[in-house]
Image: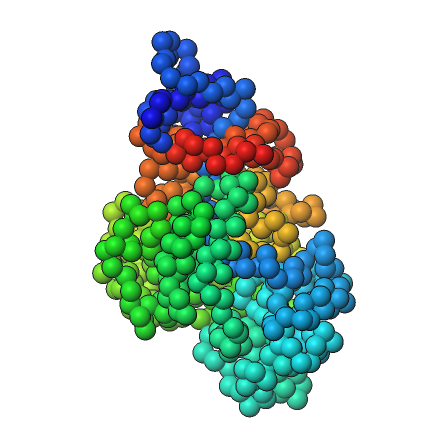
Amino acid sequence: MTKVMFKNGKIFTSNTNQKYANAMIIHNGIIEWIGDQDEMEDFQGEIIDLQSRRVLPGIIDAHMHPLLLANSSKQIACTPPLVYSIGDMIKELAKMVDEEWIEGWGYDEGKLEEGRTPNRHDLDQVSIDKPIVITRTCGHIISVNSKALAIAGINKHTIDPAGGKIDRDMNGEPTGVLRESARLLVLDKMPQLSMEENATRLAELTKSLYAHGITSITDLMASNKPMDYVDIYTLAREKGLTHNVVLYYMWHDLKVNPILNEENTNRENPIHIGGVKLFADGSVSGRTAWINPSFLGDEDNYGIATTSEDELLEAMEYAKQHGVQLVVHAMGEQAIDLIVNTFYGMESWIQDGPSIRIEHAAMPTAQAIERAAEMGIAFVPQPIFLYAEIESYLKNLGVERTKTTYPVNKMLEAGIPVAFSSDAPATAWADPVNPFIGIKSAVTRVAYDGTDTGQAEKIDVETAIELYTRGAQQITRIPSIGQLKSGYQADFIILNKDILEISPEEIEHIIVEETYVKGISVYKK
């Protein structure tokens, strides 16, 4: 293949030893050289003029749910600008009344005029004959109608499952709101899409991801039932999905069907399994994170604990046996403490990255930060949460406590490995996967409505980019990406505005003009 020189660019490399360049030479998809174009006089090959545009490494989304994102696009979006009230939601859901199951996603009671969670009686206004399931923005809570409760066999005598809660009215009757593992009572009854349908939807997501500059992805809810995610993504690749993909499998599935082996965990494969995933609690916005002190206005509510020390140790042994990461969702202080204290003093089993990842890490204590740094435990927060879900955070935690959540500055100062990500589609934003919203949020620490979310924890633009690129690579462990340097894969994006020169408030309006993977253009606006 002919060598290609990209010149006359403003390249930010994410390489700490050489942060900036204006030219690079690519051969067979790999960066052969990068630096000052004046050093390369007699270049023989194709030359592409970057026209003084800003170039960044391809974005790595270290925590997202592509299959859920692909499927949510086929459901009713219960978010602004379509839905501002439960009344709006009822009207929108009625458009699907001919479907076997009526589905919606993304509601946030903090953004609804009524200021409350929709219940079975609300959804019964859409239909009493068709089951209805709508998923809260966090993905940890669903609201269902009476038909869905009946199909799942849920009534006033149904016992809350371990790690879950069935909301009930004054008479003990289920309200239709199901939290954490209680969701599965209904979700497990829903018809499943075929392998073909799932793979096709994933493949259709490819262009949208490249349009956002995302060149490598993860799936943090992978499973092997009713079909294996490796198989789904492999078929999607045959249909046009060309991203690197790292899958993290749910521990409760692996306990029943322990499928990890040398082939499906091989990081040289474009699709591979990178870790074992558990949940230690729920979400701040859904009032199910396991916190201390309690939620504002509810002194008895400390959230829901969804794992134990014994389960964490059991999952760790399996992860260690197969040389993959242990990945644990934890938002509240008590959940994070449980993880850090359980493994404190133990040796890592992975040498080229963190053995343990804590996803979200919204409210770590000072001791948890100190111990996590000492042990090399990684934190993977999502800046978009505070930006998009500010109403729920203020309601559930209060103003001052909200400002101390996601203390990215403290994490970095302590030396904790950190990666940014979106958790898409699990956030209350119409474009949940957009990394520039996340960067703006981290840099300004101001929510979409102008609320101050904690100036002490804001970071600079370069650091935010690095946490979406080099930092994300160091935690996902996908080989040879995340930086623009010699020997690395030529994954990069070209922006319409210079993210390092415009005001932070303008960052959300940045558009990706071109995306390259292995030196080949895969998207052009």
